[in-house]
Length: 140
Image: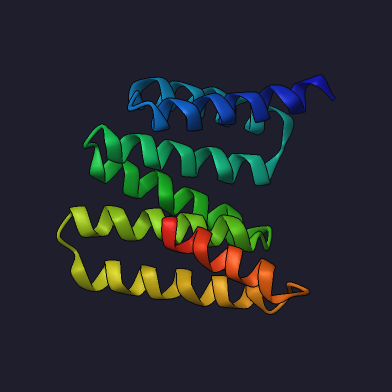
């Protein structure tokens, strides 16, 4: 199981790098996480790695590459019925579309993300968790 923890650590390092304004380091962590996820057949983590890569690529102004990474994350998340991955992939896809001047596509992706979040919210047992989910979605 050590191999699985290494992927989580890569993701955490990449997320921290993004927060510190170090998108190249975040991208490197995302690439390492993605390679390990593919090697071990961990599809959920593969989707998550693509999403991390998409955020890093956006920060590096590699908008077209970010859109491709977001699409890869969404494809996997959809295939494995991973709604949190779908929401996050759609959110970063919307950001990439906004940057590319694709207003209608951005609106559509954001609307799909909102619908996924609303669907997830219906599964939560109380209002506190639903409020936290919606707050997290707004930060995305």
